[in-house]
Length: 227
View 1 (cartoon, one colour):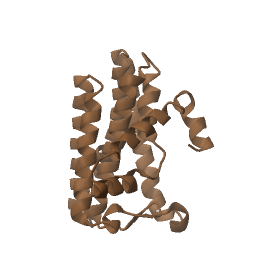
View 2 (spheres, helix red, strand yellow; view 1 turned 90 degrees about the vertical axis):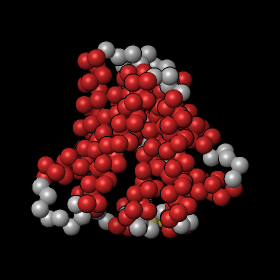
View 3 (cartoon, one colour; view 1 turned 60 degrees about the vertical axis):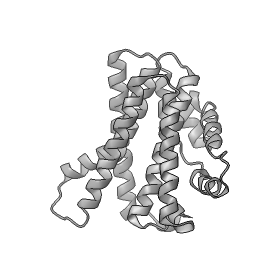
View 4 (tube, one colour; view 1 turned 180 degrees about the vertical axis):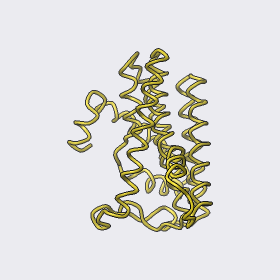
């Protein structure tokens, strides 16, 4: 973890190691080709922003790592699986300066890799023992899928306005940020006002995150950004 991440994540920085450990456990499968694909997909230790949001939200109440860490891991797996599938849909060959899974393997195997990670994410979220949080997880997946379908259907449609763009990134990106903070708050036993405030914070952070990322697609240096 970088010094910047340590500074940003503050009280939960060291606990994110537990998320990394749980992600590593997902790679321990008998099938060698699957191990290779999982290692490729999960190898780049990125910002882990979504698990960090789960843990940070949890600090507002009963900070129970036995419940928060599985949720953070589930959300990171969901996020990674969605990227793997997105790369297949988009025909992308690189992401952040690395070859995509579909470029290294093939589309059929990469779709199955994403499916495996989705299944593991679903299993992880059940470890929280919370039906409301499990429902949030399912809603996040539905919203992300809707956003991706909308993006595909709206490709090259110059008639789409700003409000439509905001609606789409709300589903594709911001929803998962919001569900991360909301889920962490629910598991920590926060009151209704706290849960909603944290959900709103996560959602709006996700909106800002995606807008900046989209702007950088046009203004950033390709070699520096790796995309």
